[in-house]
Image (cartoon, rainbow over all chains, first blue to last red):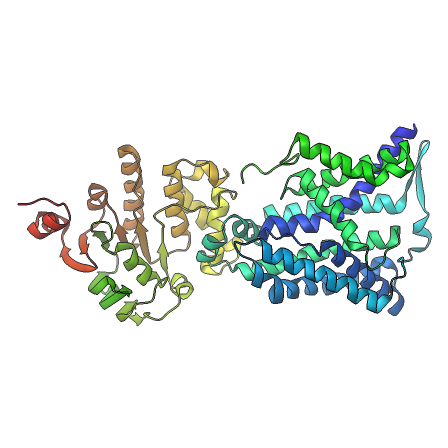
Length: 287
Length: 240
């Protein structure tokens, strides 16, 4: 029974990793942009939620709701003013710029909030759990996992059922032809990054309520996000969710064997997938 | 019949090379004009000047009675100049229907609901309806050419520019495509068609224009043009 519990906890933890990864997957899928500041943007959103909870005396969920449009605007502006200028055939400039952004964000957060680790208070929810037979599942992990599935469904719907989604996919396919058809790639990219920041805010809500964070927490989250995206197959949303779950399960199983192995086991699972299926589990039909 | 498009002494050079040399011609509304000429005669450049992808060095281009010589390409597209490309460039990962939706919504500035039926009708007419939900990347060459045509149609052009759309097709495929183009033309769409496959061209167009070294060396009825000594010498390389 302990293994069932371990795997279930791992699946739920995977939901958190999937939330970290979905925004990254979205941006990479549409504009082939690897955002090295993704983890730091999650931490930025977590601080924003934290500030809103104290400033406006809101619960974490209401604060996240207020943070959503703010972060959308941050993403939109970032893409318009900075990232659109460096996108092109060379992949190096966007890497350098987002790396720089990562450094700037970490230092700015340290300046503003000090290096102390913080947590978004979630009251009774922090310890609430639902007993299922002999197993007890935390309410926050369950909410995290449900959110990951909802976000995946919502993005899937956006991509395949809406005009904006078709414009996203057309631009991702061939920006030059898309612009001949009257699609404006710069505007499309700005919306995409805005939407990615909405996912980032949801990820930040759960990151901040379930664990401590400080201004330097970002890069480690970025690694989990990368691993989930690559395990799933670049650009596949359900694949990203599966990738998150695989890392989550590997970590809890590893921790069950030896508590020191938690993080290591996640990375080993990632390496194993890379060895067996270098293109990920669910690569897109054609690249 | 009034002219939908007229070019007056239009010229374009790349450095010392004149690729369009004082080109003057009219296309009456509803007519189909074929453009032939050897490789490098400046046929595609002429299209780029008409769509605005290249700016003319001299001369005037009028579309629907307005001077559009300096109008940006997007504006010309919205005012009804549609174009297919020599090499089909569909969005491979989008379905055939979605390819049309993107062209129609962005090319006409309309919401999807307003163009869905129209797109379906175009797929019907270009015989792609059975492939509507397939990713465009899985299409055959003929289907890709048809999609190129359908996508140009989805912007509801008044003037349709076709650039070597029959190239690379087998004889049977070519006939099938020509039938579709004729059907579109019969609906009143004005067509300018660059093509090397002359027998395909002459089944649709009312007039032929021959271009050589950027100059118009003949324009008129296809039979008369093909019979002219000058055209046969320059274009077909036949010494008479």
